[in-house]
Length: 151
Image: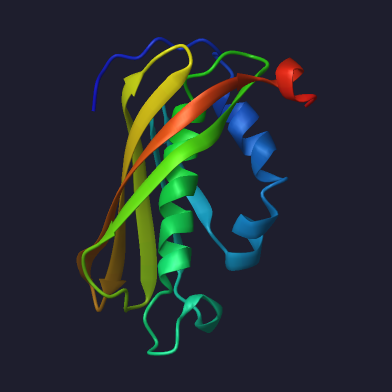
């Protein structure tokens, strides 16, 4: 992770917390951000039946969503007032089946530019106190002015 980052919006934490209200899918699955720092976001949730696939492992789509969320919010900590980030590219490598009681994710920025922000993410499952990385992800986030997209 590169550091230090240039903070363009000193109120990034408050803005992210405000944006969370509109994150309907996060609320639906019970995913909550734990840590919000410049270029770094962590989050977690309990593993419940509605995110499992047919063999009772965490669904790959849920895993990809969690990685995308933490990487997107990590990128969002570094944009200016009136800007948002949109996922331009998302890649997920599934390393282990997701099983256990809790799932956590960490997203971080490794290079921030004016128009593109490059991120990496890691998703873990905790099973009886043991954490196992179940996925590694990378994303390119596009920085967009809200005025350009009518937001």
